[in-house]
Length: 263
Image 1 (tube, rainbow, N blue to C red):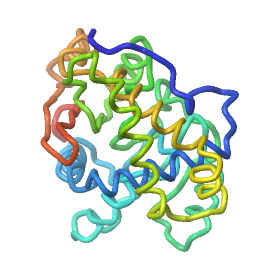
Image 2 (tube, helix red, strand yellow):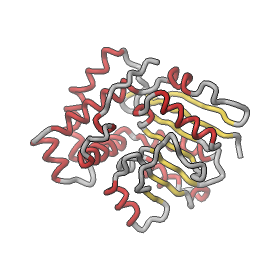
Image 3 (cartoon, helix red, strand yellow):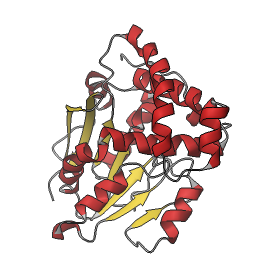
């Protein structure tokens, strides 16, 4: 595989949760700038064709991510007006969960207990989505996630905002670029808190963490060829895989869609 499994700060169990929350809020804003929801919409719609349940289970949701906008867009059509979105994470963002679970919107739920993406209960019938998160997993865990979806006979959509297509030596040029970018993007983060401002501009630890994790995310992203390795032996007449690249802001994106036989 081309990918290299370096560490990201937000993956570390000891990493302060309040900093992780600030970082995931920034990531949500960055997804809006990239227009990730617009790219995801047709893929999610395609994935929903392979389940009888009008439910999306978003894995590794962080602060919520672009699946919220995707769900709201889908619900505008009569076919998906009853669509439900379930957010989850191994490290649940409890402030985001408190917001979504207390807003008068029965179509969005945030699971407050840790959910392991590689061991999802078969009782959770839904299109599973992972947006910019499979790269956090080592190959053995990534394969377990895909295998778990197949064995549960549920569709799964993997989406990454990088295709890991650049030469390796260019990975590290992203660090200073990402550091500077945080200074311009941060004012658009919502909800805005004093911590987001102080630890971006006065004590700039957030730009450092975001810049490192951003560069490493690209280095860890599974290429389409890497995905071929992950799904070896996971295809049969009842479960197929589709993968590809999509052009978007900031470069190519990659996706992998696991599809049970049409219902």
